[in-house]
Image 1 (tube, one colour):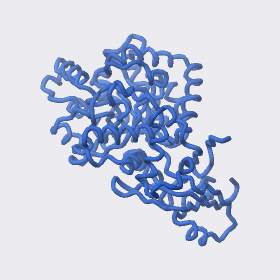
Image 2 (tube, rainbow, N blue to C red; image 1 turned 90 degrees about the vertical axis):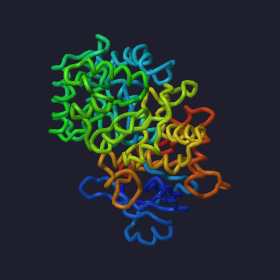
Image 3 (spheres, rainbow, N blue to C red; image 1 turned 180 degrees about the vertical axis):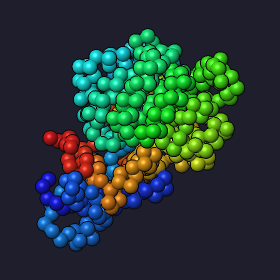
Image 4 (cartoon, rainbow, N blue to C red; image 1 turned 45 degrees about the horizontal axis):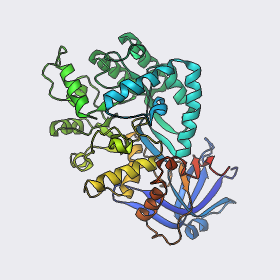
Length: 438
């Protein structure tokens, strides 16, 4: 694409909030090249006739008639180093970590292995349409560097910190953990995410010290919180034996005490939270990444952690977005995550979990949490031209966002692995970076 102006023709779904999702039948995106960066932003979105009438200069027209365009995805909680254990047998969280996850992550000590894996993983991630989110790496600083090197889009990424209750091969000294954070936070600043694996594996002194470094560099913070009842019992019993934590009443209180609950904090899961914990999270403006495919019943390839009460979370005014939790979640595609969110809630008789809401929580909601919603997250004017082209829709389909999104979800329902191959084309900053037909 060398033209300074591009018009893309297609049906367009553009999420705005939980309840509002714009749909433009036979729509058009008018893309303009940024003169300094040479990338494209969205200048206009609307019906084809209206948009084309505003084009003065010569422009390139790309016709995807009968196809649907949506914004690219944000996956707000995933472990790129767990790609190989996505479909390993799952009995419960702690057993799965010990028997599958930790041995897999140990391999990333090898730099050549890490580089090879990063190239493959992030290429596949692009093909699923994910161009942003919050990513966990292994303990090894070079694995975080490789992730930054190969990730395409807008991600915060961090190396997990593991200073106690961890396998010998993955246990760091406090100094090693501290030094890794100093180095990576200084190098990547606001794109770095301080990542204590969870309170079981990271000692409180390390969390406190590294939290100060993260704040100094305006980095994000991410960890796990209240994923399973077993995890909660383990961590609270553990910390009540530690000096200064004898009187803690909850898992969330531990993170508050070490200064890790902030407006730039993303806690994974948050399924089993008390009212007091919800109030703590709200008061610190901490966000939650909900991972339905990972939390799903074991028969659905999840860890069986429980159903996330999104209505309760919203009632307390907490920000939240969707994540795949690779490898607790079995598939990379956010379409599978959206499917799981809707289906689990419908089966439980919970109203309000529809595909329009799921799309917002898989796109703009993530951009909002990462404080990137002024330029990313949907297809509004002045935002970067990051979007996905989906397969042609059935001409007999009801032309509304809910019906169309359900149509695409049904394409992969019988074989969920197909979701990873659903997207036909991926545009990043207005440039075609993946073409399924090529």
